[in-house]
Image 1: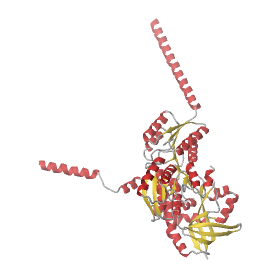
Image 2: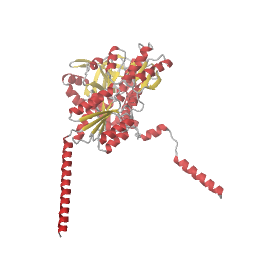
Image 3: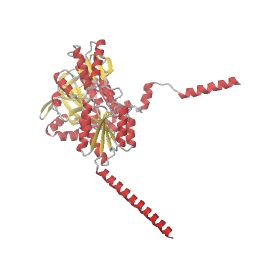
Image 4: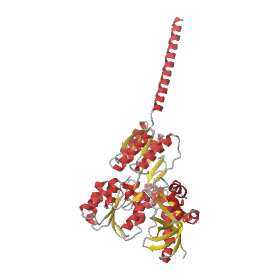
Length: 209
Length: 322
Protein backbone atom coordinates (compact mmCIF):
# COMPACT_ATOMS: atom_id res chain seq x y z
CA UNK A 1 0.00 0.00 0.00
CA UNK A 2 2.83 2.32 0.96
CA UNK A 3 4.63 1.40 -2.23
CA UNK A 4 1.52 2.30 -4.26
CA UNK A 5 1.40 5.71 -2.59
CA UNK A 6 5.05 6.34 -3.51
CA UNK A 7 4.41 5.28 -7.12
CA UNK A 8 1.39 7.60 -7.38
CA UNK A 9 3.35 10.47 -5.79
CA UNK A 10 6.29 10.00 -8.17
CA UNK A 11 3.93 9.72 -11.17
CA UNK A 12 2.13 12.91 -10.09
CA UNK A 13 5.46 14.67 -9.64
CA UNK A 14 6.62 13.58 -13.10
CA UNK A 15 3.29 14.64 -14.65
CA UNK A 16 3.43 18.11 -13.07
CA UNK A 17 7.13 18.46 -13.84
CA UNK A 18 6.68 17.48 -17.50
CA UNK A 19 3.88 19.97 -18.00
CA UNK A 20 5.70 22.76 -16.15
CA UNK A 21 8.58 23.10 -18.59
CA UNK A 22 9.12 22.76 -22.30
CA UNK A 23 12.13 22.81 -24.57
CA UNK A 24 12.42 24.72 -27.82
CA UNK A 25 14.83 26.76 -29.91
CA UNK A 26 15.54 30.17 -28.35
CA UNK A 27 15.43 31.82 -31.79
CA UNK A 28 11.91 30.47 -32.41
CA UNK A 29 10.70 31.62 -28.98
CA UNK A 30 12.08 35.11 -29.59
CA UNK A 31 10.48 35.19 -33.01
CA UNK A 32 7.15 34.29 -31.43
CA UNK A 33 7.54 36.94 -28.73
CA UNK A 34 8.18 39.66 -31.27
CA UNK A 35 4.93 38.72 -32.95
CA UNK A 36 6.72 38.53 -36.28
CA UNK A 37 4.64 35.76 -37.79
CA UNK A 38 3.70 37.39 -41.10
CA UNK A 39 4.94 35.56 -44.18
CA UNK A 40 6.99 38.48 -45.45
CA UNK A 41 8.23 36.61 -48.52
CA UNK A 42 4.66 36.03 -49.70
CA UNK A 43 3.74 39.61 -48.79
CA UNK A 44 6.65 41.01 -50.81
CA UNK A 45 5.87 38.81 -53.80
CA UNK A 46 2.25 39.98 -53.74
CA UNK A 47 3.43 43.59 -53.47
CA UNK A 48 5.77 43.14 -56.44
CA UNK A 49 3.19 41.39 -58.62
CA UNK A 50 0.02 43.29 -57.75
CA UNK A 51 0.75 46.66 -56.12
CA UNK A 52 4.04 47.95 -57.51
CA UNK A 53 2.75 48.08 -61.14
CA UNK A 54 0.41 50.94 -60.21
CA UNK A 55 3.42 52.95 -59.05
CA UNK A 56 5.42 52.00 -62.16
CA UNK A 57 2.60 53.35 -64.32
CA UNK A 58 2.94 56.74 -62.63
CA UNK A 59 6.74 56.95 -63.05
CA UNK A 60 7.92 60.34 -64.29
CA UNK A 61 10.22 60.57 -67.31
CA UNK A 62 13.77 61.20 -66.07
CA UNK A 63 14.31 64.13 -68.49
CA UNK A 64 11.08 65.74 -67.35
CA UNK A 65 12.04 65.30 -63.70
CA UNK A 66 15.54 66.74 -64.09
CA UNK A 67 14.18 69.73 -66.00
CA UNK A 68 11.55 70.36 -63.32
CA UNK A 69 14.02 69.98 -60.45
CA UNK A 70 16.31 72.55 -62.07
CA UNK A 71 13.53 75.11 -62.43
CA UNK A 72 11.08 74.37 -59.61
CA UNK A 73 12.67 71.96 -57.12
CA UNK A 74 9.97 72.41 -54.48
CA UNK A 75 7.23 71.57 -56.96
CA UNK A 76 9.18 68.56 -58.25
CA UNK A 77 9.59 67.16 -54.73
CA UNK A 78 6.04 67.97 -53.67
CA UNK A 79 4.44 66.33 -56.70
CA UNK A 80 6.70 63.41 -57.50
CA UNK A 81 8.81 62.44 -54.47
CA UNK A 82 8.01 60.09 -51.62
CA UNK A 83 9.63 59.83 -48.20
CA UNK A 84 8.56 58.01 -45.08
CA UNK A 85 9.67 60.38 -42.39
CA UNK A 86 11.53 63.60 -41.88
CA UNK A 87 14.73 64.50 -43.68
CA UNK A 88 16.39 65.47 -46.92
CA UNK A 89 16.42 62.10 -48.69
CA UNK A 90 13.47 61.58 -50.99
CA UNK A 91 12.67 59.00 -53.64
CA UNK A 92 11.23 59.18 -57.14
CA UNK A 93 9.92 56.47 -59.44
CA UNK A 94 11.38 57.34 -62.85
CA UNK A 95 11.45 55.94 -66.39
CA UNK A 96 13.52 56.62 -69.48
CA UNK A 97 15.49 55.30 -72.42
CA UNK A 98 19.22 55.63 -73.05
CA UNK A 99 22.28 54.16 -74.71
CA UNK A 100 24.86 52.16 -72.79
CA UNK A 101 28.19 54.00 -72.75
CA UNK A 102 30.05 51.84 -70.22
CA UNK A 103 29.62 48.61 -68.28
CA UNK A 104 31.42 47.94 -64.98
CA UNK A 105 31.15 45.38 -62.19
CA UNK A 106 28.69 47.51 -60.24
CA UNK A 107 26.69 49.41 -62.82
CA UNK A 108 25.82 50.30 -66.38
CA UNK A 109 26.21 53.89 -67.56
CA UNK A 110 23.55 55.34 -69.81
CA UNK A 111 23.47 58.44 -71.97
CA UNK A 112 19.95 59.77 -72.25
CA UNK A 113 19.13 62.30 -74.93
CA UNK A 114 16.54 64.95 -74.25
CA UNK A 115 15.27 68.23 -75.64
CA UNK A 116 17.64 70.21 -73.40
CA UNK A 117 20.74 68.16 -74.12
CA UNK A 118 21.91 64.83 -72.82
CA UNK A 119 21.93 63.33 -69.36
CA UNK A 120 24.23 60.70 -67.87
CA UNK A 121 23.09 58.25 -65.19
CA UNK A 122 24.01 54.88 -63.75
CA UNK A 123 21.81 51.81 -63.53
CA UNK A 124 22.84 49.86 -60.42
CA UNK A 125 23.43 46.25 -61.40
CA UNK A 126 25.28 44.77 -58.42
CA UNK A 127 24.68 46.53 -55.09
CA UNK A 128 20.90 46.63 -55.15
CA UNK A 129 20.17 47.30 -51.47
CA UNK A 130 18.25 49.87 -49.47
CA UNK A 131 14.75 51.29 -49.46
CA UNK A 132 14.69 53.19 -52.76
CA UNK A 133 12.11 51.03 -54.51
CA UNK A 134 9.88 50.52 -51.47
CA UNK A 135 9.85 54.21 -50.62
CA UNK A 136 9.66 55.53 -54.20
CA UNK A 137 6.49 53.49 -54.70
CA UNK A 138 4.72 55.68 -52.14
CA UNK A 139 2.41 52.77 -51.39
CA UNK A 140 3.47 51.70 -47.90
CA UNK A 141 3.04 53.21 -44.46
CA UNK A 142 5.63 52.24 -41.88
CA UNK A 143 3.14 52.44 -39.01
CA UNK A 144 0.94 49.82 -40.66
CA UNK A 145 3.63 47.23 -39.90
CA UNK A 146 4.14 45.54 -36.54
CA UNK A 147 7.73 46.65 -36.25
CA UNK A 148 10.55 48.32 -38.16
CA UNK A 149 12.32 45.09 -38.88
CA UNK A 150 9.25 43.66 -40.65
CA UNK A 151 8.96 46.85 -42.67
CA UNK A 152 12.63 46.60 -43.67
CA UNK A 153 12.03 43.03 -44.80
CA UNK A 154 9.82 44.40 -47.58
CA UNK A 155 12.80 46.30 -48.98
CA UNK A 156 15.10 43.32 -48.59
CA UNK A 157 12.54 41.13 -50.41
CA UNK A 158 12.05 43.58 -53.27
CA UNK A 159 15.80 43.97 -53.72
CA UNK A 160 16.19 40.21 -53.77
CA UNK A 161 13.63 39.90 -56.56
CA UNK A 162 15.50 42.58 -58.55
CA UNK A 163 18.87 40.85 -58.01
CA UNK A 164 17.52 37.39 -58.88
CA UNK A 165 14.94 38.12 -61.59
CA UNK A 166 15.50 41.54 -63.16
CA UNK A 167 19.29 41.81 -63.34
CA UNK A 168 20.62 38.40 -64.51
CA UNK A 169 18.93 38.35 -67.95
CA UNK A 170 19.86 42.00 -68.49
CA UNK A 171 23.50 41.58 -67.47
CA UNK A 172 23.80 38.54 -69.68
CA UNK A 173 22.76 40.41 -72.83
CA UNK A 174 23.71 44.05 -72.23
CA UNK A 175 26.61 45.44 -74.22
CA UNK A 176 28.02 48.85 -74.98
CA UNK A 177 25.91 50.68 -77.58
CA UNK A 178 22.62 48.94 -76.69
CA UNK A 179 19.57 51.10 -76.11
CA UNK A 180 17.88 50.34 -72.81
CA UNK A 181 14.39 51.22 -71.58
CA UNK A 182 14.16 51.35 -67.80
CA UNK A 183 11.91 52.07 -64.85
CA UNK A 184 13.33 52.40 -61.38
CA UNK A 185 13.85 54.39 -58.22
CA UNK A 186 16.12 57.40 -57.74
CA UNK A 187 17.18 59.00 -54.46
CA UNK A 188 17.65 62.77 -54.34
CA UNK A 189 18.82 64.92 -51.46
CA UNK A 190 16.46 67.90 -51.40
CA UNK A 191 18.99 70.06 -49.55
CA UNK A 192 22.11 69.16 -51.48
CA UNK A 193 20.84 68.57 -55.00
CA UNK A 194 23.21 66.72 -57.31
CA UNK A 195 21.81 65.91 -60.74
CA UNK A 196 25.03 64.82 -62.46
CA UNK A 197 25.44 61.66 -60.39
CA UNK A 198 22.05 59.96 -60.61
CA UNK A 199 21.83 56.28 -59.76
CA UNK A 200 18.75 54.24 -60.64
CA UNK A 201 17.74 51.11 -58.77
CA UNK A 202 16.02 49.24 -61.60
CA UNK A 203 12.59 47.66 -61.41
CA UNK A 204 12.19 47.01 -65.14
CA UNK A 205 14.98 46.75 -67.73
CA UNK A 206 14.55 46.07 -71.42
CA UNK A 207 17.09 46.15 -74.22
CA UNK A 208 15.19 47.67 -77.13
CA UNK A 209 17.92 47.70 -79.77
CA UNK B 1 -34.17 79.12 27.91
CA UNK B 2 -31.33 81.58 28.02
CA UNK B 3 -28.95 78.68 28.02
CA UNK B 4 -30.74 77.28 24.95
CA UNK B 5 -30.51 80.61 23.11
CA UNK B 6 -26.85 80.83 23.97
CA UNK B 7 -26.32 77.32 22.68
CA UNK B 8 -28.19 78.11 19.46
CA UNK B 9 -26.07 81.24 18.98
CA UNK B 10 -22.96 79.19 19.64
CA UNK B 11 -24.04 76.64 17.02
CA UNK B 12 -24.84 79.39 14.55
CA UNK B 13 -21.46 81.01 15.11
CA UNK B 14 -19.70 77.66 14.66
CA UNK B 15 -21.64 76.98 11.43
CA UNK B 16 -20.81 80.44 10.14
CA UNK B 17 -17.14 79.90 10.95
CA UNK B 18 -17.10 76.60 9.09
CA UNK B 19 -18.95 78.23 6.18
CA UNK B 20 -16.42 81.07 5.98
CA UNK B 21 -13.57 78.63 6.34
CA UNK B 22 -14.94 76.61 3.43
CA UNK B 23 -15.36 79.75 1.35
CA UNK B 24 -11.78 80.73 2.20
CA UNK B 25 -10.49 77.30 1.29
CA UNK B 26 -12.40 77.31 -2.01
CA UNK B 27 -11.19 80.80 -2.80
CA UNK B 28 -7.67 79.80 -1.89
CA UNK B 29 -7.88 76.69 -4.12
CA UNK B 30 -9.31 78.76 -6.92
CA UNK B 31 -6.47 81.21 -6.53
CA UNK B 32 -3.94 78.39 -6.49
CA UNK B 33 -5.51 76.80 -9.59
CA UNK B 34 -5.50 80.09 -11.42
CA UNK B 35 -1.88 80.52 -10.45
CA UNK B 36 -1.22 77.07 -11.87
CA UNK B 37 -2.85 77.90 -15.19
CA UNK B 38 -0.79 81.08 -15.38
CA UNK B 39 2.37 79.05 -14.96
CA UNK B 40 4.04 77.84 -18.17
CA UNK B 41 3.79 74.13 -18.85
CA UNK B 42 6.83 72.14 -17.78
CA UNK B 43 8.76 69.76 -20.04
CA UNK B 44 11.28 67.27 -18.69
CA UNK B 45 14.11 66.26 -21.01
CA UNK B 46 15.51 62.94 -19.85
CA UNK B 47 18.64 61.93 -21.79
CA UNK B 48 20.61 58.66 -21.61
CA UNK B 49 23.95 60.42 -21.06
CA UNK B 50 25.47 63.86 -21.20
CA UNK B 51 28.92 62.36 -21.35
CA UNK B 52 28.73 62.27 -25.16
CA UNK B 53 28.63 65.55 -27.12
CA UNK B 54 26.02 64.14 -29.50
CA UNK B 55 23.49 63.71 -26.68
CA UNK B 56 24.40 67.12 -25.26
CA UNK B 57 23.32 68.63 -28.60
CA UNK B 58 20.10 66.57 -28.47
CA UNK B 59 19.28 67.72 -24.91
CA UNK B 60 20.25 71.36 -25.40
CA UNK B 61 18.28 71.65 -28.64
CA UNK B 62 15.18 70.12 -27.02
CA UNK B 63 15.47 72.50 -24.06
CA UNK B 64 16.02 75.50 -26.32
CA UNK B 65 13.07 74.64 -28.55
CA UNK B 66 10.80 74.02 -25.53
CA UNK B 67 11.80 77.42 -24.11
CA UNK B 68 11.17 79.09 -27.48
CA UNK B 69 7.68 77.60 -27.47
CA UNK B 70 7.06 79.16 -24.06
CA UNK B 71 7.57 76.16 -21.81
CA UNK B 72 9.75 75.61 -18.77
CA UNK B 73 12.35 72.93 -19.57
CA UNK B 74 14.65 70.93 -17.33
CA UNK B 75 17.29 68.43 -18.45
CA UNK B 76 17.95 65.18 -16.55
CA UNK B 77 21.05 63.03 -17.18
CA UNK B 78 20.45 59.27 -16.76
CA UNK B 79 24.19 58.50 -16.99
CA UNK B 80 23.38 55.35 -19.01
CA UNK B 81 21.74 53.91 -15.89
CA UNK B 82 18.12 52.71 -16.05
CA UNK B 83 17.75 52.95 -12.25
CA UNK B 84 18.72 56.62 -12.34
CA UNK B 85 16.41 57.06 -15.32
CA UNK B 86 13.56 55.58 -13.21
CA UNK B 87 14.30 58.13 -10.47
CA UNK B 88 14.12 60.94 -13.03
CA UNK B 89 10.73 59.71 -14.24
CA UNK B 90 9.40 59.51 -10.65
CA UNK B 91 10.73 62.99 -10.04
CA UNK B 92 9.23 64.38 -13.26
CA UNK B 93 5.82 62.84 -12.58
CA UNK B 94 5.61 63.93 -8.92
CA UNK B 95 6.94 67.41 -9.72
CA UNK B 96 4.08 67.96 -12.15
CA UNK B 97 5.93 67.99 -15.48
CA UNK B 98 3.42 68.04 -18.34
CA UNK B 99 5.46 66.14 -20.96
CA UNK B 100 8.70 64.20 -21.23
CA UNK B 101 11.10 64.35 -24.18
CA UNK B 102 12.99 61.15 -23.74
CA UNK B 103 16.19 59.57 -24.98
CA UNK B 104 16.01 56.02 -23.56
CA UNK B 105 18.90 54.21 -21.95
CA UNK B 106 17.67 50.72 -22.75
CA UNK B 107 15.19 49.52 -25.39
CA UNK B 108 13.61 47.07 -22.94
CA UNK B 109 14.57 48.49 -19.54
CA UNK B 110 13.09 51.93 -20.27
CA UNK B 111 9.58 50.65 -21.10
CA UNK B 112 8.50 50.50 -17.43
CA UNK B 113 9.48 54.13 -16.93
CA UNK B 114 7.43 55.28 -19.91
CA UNK B 115 4.49 53.17 -18.69
CA UNK B 116 4.55 55.00 -15.35
CA UNK B 117 4.35 58.33 -17.16
CA UNK B 118 1.53 57.03 -19.35
CA UNK B 119 -0.41 55.95 -16.25
CA UNK B 120 0.05 59.48 -14.88
CA UNK B 121 -1.21 60.92 -18.21
CA UNK B 122 2.17 62.45 -19.00
CA UNK B 123 2.98 62.08 -22.73
CA UNK B 124 6.43 60.75 -23.62
CA UNK B 125 8.14 61.52 -26.93
CA UNK B 126 11.19 59.36 -27.60
CA UNK B 127 14.11 60.95 -29.41
CA UNK B 128 16.71 59.05 -31.46
CA UNK B 129 16.50 55.75 -29.58
CA UNK B 130 13.42 53.53 -29.70
CA UNK B 131 11.94 51.21 -27.11
CA UNK B 132 10.66 47.71 -27.83
CA UNK B 133 7.03 48.66 -27.47
CA UNK B 134 4.61 50.48 -29.74
CA UNK B 135 1.99 51.15 -27.07
CA UNK B 136 3.68 53.14 -24.31
CA UNK B 137 5.32 56.20 -25.89
CA UNK B 138 3.12 58.86 -27.50
CA UNK B 139 5.50 58.94 -30.47
CA UNK B 140 9.07 57.91 -31.29
CA UNK B 141 11.18 60.16 -33.50
CA UNK B 142 14.10 58.01 -34.59
CA UNK B 143 17.18 58.13 -36.73
CA UNK B 144 16.78 55.67 -39.58
CA UNK B 145 19.96 53.89 -38.54
CA UNK B 146 19.15 50.72 -40.48
CA UNK B 147 18.82 52.50 -43.83
CA UNK B 148 21.81 54.70 -43.05
CA UNK B 149 23.95 51.63 -42.48
CA UNK B 150 22.73 49.97 -45.67
CA UNK B 151 24.18 52.96 -47.52
CA UNK B 152 27.32 52.61 -45.39
CA UNK B 153 27.51 48.89 -46.19
CA UNK B 154 27.30 49.57 -49.94
CA UNK B 155 30.08 52.14 -49.68
CA UNK B 156 32.15 49.78 -47.52
CA UNK B 157 31.84 47.00 -50.12
CA UNK B 158 32.90 49.34 -52.91
CA UNK B 159 35.84 50.78 -50.96
CA UNK B 160 37.18 47.36 -50.01
CA UNK B 161 36.55 46.12 -53.54
CA UNK B 162 34.39 43.25 -52.23
CA UNK B 163 37.21 41.44 -50.42
CA UNK B 164 39.32 41.63 -47.28
CA UNK B 165 39.25 41.18 -43.52
CA UNK B 166 37.36 43.57 -41.31
CA UNK B 167 36.41 44.29 -37.69
CA UNK B 168 33.09 45.54 -36.35
CA UNK B 169 32.97 47.61 -33.16
CA UNK B 170 29.46 47.69 -31.72
CA UNK B 171 27.82 50.24 -29.42
CA UNK B 172 25.81 49.47 -26.27
CA UNK B 173 24.36 45.99 -26.66
CA UNK B 174 21.09 47.01 -24.97
CA UNK B 175 20.44 49.82 -27.44
CA UNK B 176 18.33 49.09 -30.52
CA UNK B 177 20.39 51.53 -32.59
CA UNK B 178 23.43 49.31 -32.06
CA UNK B 179 21.66 46.40 -33.72
CA UNK B 180 19.79 48.46 -36.34
CA UNK B 181 23.18 49.76 -37.53
CA UNK B 182 24.85 46.37 -37.38
CA UNK B 183 21.97 44.63 -39.18
CA UNK B 184 21.77 47.31 -41.88
CA UNK B 185 25.49 47.00 -42.50
CA UNK B 186 25.49 43.20 -42.53
CA UNK B 187 22.41 43.04 -44.79
CA UNK B 188 24.76 44.20 -47.55
CA UNK B 189 28.24 43.06 -46.55
CA UNK B 190 27.29 39.46 -45.71
CA UNK B 191 26.34 38.87 -49.35
CA UNK B 192 30.02 39.16 -50.29
CA UNK B 193 31.76 36.00 -49.10
CA UNK B 194 35.26 37.35 -49.66
CA UNK B 195 34.64 40.02 -47.03
CA UNK B 196 35.44 38.26 -43.76
CA UNK B 197 34.62 39.67 -40.33
CA UNK B 198 37.51 38.54 -38.08
CA UNK B 199 36.26 40.19 -34.87
CA UNK B 200 33.11 41.80 -33.49
CA UNK B 201 33.27 43.53 -30.10
CA UNK B 202 31.26 46.07 -28.15
CA UNK B 203 32.87 49.31 -26.98
CA UNK B 204 29.68 50.92 -25.58
CA UNK B 205 29.83 53.89 -27.99
CA UNK B 206 32.92 55.02 -26.04
CA UNK B 207 36.08 56.37 -27.68
CA UNK B 208 38.56 55.04 -25.09
CA UNK B 209 36.97 51.60 -24.96
CA UNK B 210 37.07 51.43 -28.78
CA UNK B 211 40.75 52.25 -28.74
CA UNK B 212 41.40 49.45 -26.24
CA UNK B 213 39.28 47.01 -28.27
CA UNK B 214 41.14 47.92 -31.45
CA UNK B 215 44.55 47.50 -29.78
CA UNK B 216 43.52 44.08 -28.57
CA UNK B 217 42.04 43.01 -31.92
CA UNK B 218 45.16 44.13 -33.81
CA UNK B 219 47.32 41.80 -31.74
CA UNK B 220 45.38 38.78 -32.97
CA UNK B 221 44.55 40.17 -36.43
CA UNK B 222 47.33 42.44 -37.70
CA UNK B 223 46.25 42.06 -41.33
CA UNK B 224 42.82 43.69 -41.36
CA UNK B 225 41.63 46.00 -44.13
CA UNK B 226 38.65 47.79 -42.62
CA UNK B 227 36.85 48.72 -39.39
CA UNK B 228 33.14 49.49 -39.16
CA UNK B 229 32.18 51.35 -35.97
CA UNK B 230 28.66 51.89 -34.62
CA UNK B 231 29.37 55.56 -33.89
CA UNK B 232 31.92 58.28 -34.56
CA UNK B 233 33.43 58.35 -31.07
CA UNK B 234 34.41 54.69 -31.50
CA UNK B 235 35.69 55.38 -35.03
CA UNK B 236 38.03 58.03 -33.61
CA UNK B 237 39.18 55.61 -30.89
CA UNK B 238 39.81 52.85 -33.45
CA UNK B 239 41.68 55.27 -35.71
CA UNK B 240 43.86 56.35 -32.77
CA UNK B 241 44.82 52.70 -32.12
CA UNK B 242 45.58 52.19 -35.82
CA UNK B 243 47.84 55.27 -35.87
CA UNK B 244 49.70 53.95 -32.81
CA UNK B 245 50.13 50.58 -34.55
CA UNK B 246 51.31 52.24 -37.78
CA UNK B 247 48.39 50.82 -39.77
CA UNK B 248 46.23 53.88 -40.35
CA UNK B 249 47.31 54.25 -43.97
CA UNK B 250 46.11 50.80 -44.94
CA UNK B 251 43.08 50.15 -42.72
CA UNK B 252 39.91 52.03 -43.71
CA UNK B 253 37.74 53.26 -40.84
CA UNK B 254 33.99 53.91 -41.12
CA UNK B 255 31.92 55.67 -38.45
CA UNK B 256 28.36 56.84 -37.86
CA UNK B 257 26.84 60.03 -36.38
CA UNK B 258 28.25 63.00 -38.31
CA UNK B 259 30.27 64.36 -35.37
CA UNK B 260 32.36 67.46 -36.08
CA UNK B 261 35.76 65.84 -35.44
CA UNK B 262 34.92 62.95 -37.76
CA UNK B 263 33.73 65.31 -40.50
CA UNK B 264 37.13 66.97 -40.31
CA UNK B 265 38.73 63.52 -40.41
CA UNK B 266 36.70 62.57 -43.50
CA UNK B 267 37.93 65.76 -45.14
CA UNK B 268 41.53 64.89 -44.18
CA UNK B 269 41.11 61.34 -45.51
CA UNK B 270 41.64 59.73 -42.09
CA UNK B 271 38.10 58.34 -41.76
CA UNK B 272 36.46 57.01 -44.93
CA UNK B 273 32.82 57.80 -44.21
CA UNK B 274 30.20 58.56 -41.59
CA UNK B 275 26.40 58.63 -41.44
CA UNK B 276 25.05 62.12 -40.84
CA UNK B 277 22.31 62.06 -38.22
CA UNK B 278 20.22 65.06 -37.31
CA UNK B 279 19.84 65.32 -33.51
CA UNK B 280 18.58 68.89 -33.79
CA UNK B 281 15.73 67.90 -36.11
CA UNK B 282 14.72 65.04 -33.79
CA UNK B 283 14.82 67.24 -30.66
CA UNK B 284 12.90 70.09 -32.28
CA UNK B 285 10.27 67.73 -33.67
CA UNK B 286 9.79 66.16 -30.23
CA UNK B 287 9.26 69.62 -28.65
CA UNK B 288 6.81 70.57 -31.40
CA UNK B 289 4.91 67.31 -30.87
CA UNK B 290 4.65 68.14 -27.15
CA UNK B 291 3.15 71.51 -28.08
CA UNK B 292 0.66 69.81 -30.42
CA UNK B 293 -0.24 67.42 -27.59
CA UNK B 294 -0.91 70.34 -25.24
CA UNK B 295 -3.13 71.83 -27.95
CA UNK B 296 -5.23 68.69 -28.04
CA UNK B 297 -3.71 66.50 -30.75
CA UNK B 298 -3.65 62.79 -29.90
CA UNK B 299 -3.19 60.87 -33.17
CA UNK B 300 0.63 60.89 -33.47
CA UNK B 301 2.45 58.40 -35.70
CA UNK B 302 4.08 55.86 -33.41
CA UNK B 303 7.40 55.96 -35.29
CA UNK B 304 8.80 58.80 -37.34
CA UNK B 305 12.09 57.95 -39.09
CA UNK B 306 14.62 60.71 -39.71
CA UNK B 307 16.81 60.10 -42.76
CA UNK B 308 20.55 59.50 -42.26
CA UNK B 309 22.87 60.72 -45.03
CA UNK B 310 26.10 59.07 -46.10
CA UNK B 311 29.04 61.48 -45.86
CA UNK B 312 32.19 60.68 -47.85
CA UNK B 313 35.05 62.62 -49.40
CA UNK B 314 32.78 63.14 -52.43
CA UNK B 315 30.18 65.23 -50.58
CA UNK B 316 31.99 66.35 -47.40
CA UNK B 317 31.93 70.01 -48.47
CA UNK B 318 28.13 70.08 -48.01
CA UNK B 319 28.39 69.11 -44.36
CA UNK B 320 31.44 71.07 -43.23
CA UNK B 321 29.67 74.35 -43.84
CA UNK B 322 26.69 73.41 -41.62
